[in-house]
Image 1 (cartoon, rainbow, N blue to C red):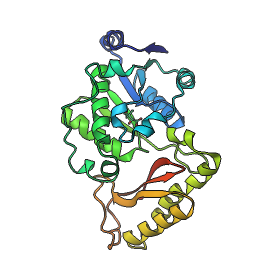
Image 2: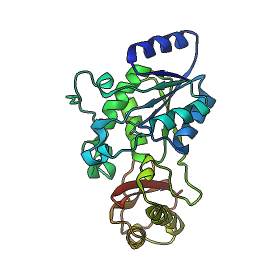
Image 3: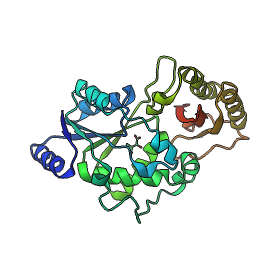
Image 4: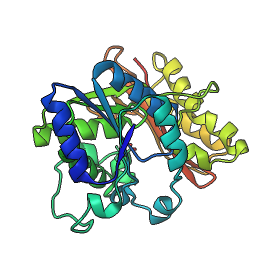
Length: 285
Ligand code: PAF
């Protein structure tokens, strides 16, 4: 694996690979890699001749500075894992390389409704920061395929929209959420959970799964209330949301109604445990 910290030599190298006809697959990450990221690397290797992974903890997408300060950094282990997966290239830039003119941007990405709900409303500015860095990374790497994890369901939709807005010729591929045998969705933030909280955190997936089981029988609002209560009873400190939305638009379903039996829907949740904010989602249909 070749590690690049600077843009110019990376781009020179990639230009040569493209000239030789290689397809580039790109897996952007913020490090603290786990099986979810590695499965994307594997998927990239199955659809592209050359796989590039980036590790960059992007300051502009953290609406909470404390969350940024505590974000786990495990670079030596990440490199080891990427080498094991036979990743071709790692891009490991410093902040000044990504944001040479400073981090503020005058560009606003018009994400419309997507930015007004769920993660968008609970983390103001978060998706603008995600778009800012993904735009920059895509400009640098110019991949043919971009691989993202379904665990960040709304982020996947935002990035698809970004690619559309920018008219970038890149195919977005979404990899399935990877879970621990217990069901807990793998996340870099899990590294900050105590063993006890990791056990309790399972309640989030269980609640989403109960929603799946109950969707044919009970009104949406009732499912949401039961799910929220079960998560709080299991030891979560706070629930930002636990709700059901259309899988294609994230339009929230009417709580007083029952599911119509055919619209594809997704249950999405964000909640705090031990001061750590976890998100998860389950496609219900
Ligand atoms: O999902 C992530 O790790 C980040 O949001 C991403 C897409 C790498 C942008 O910083």
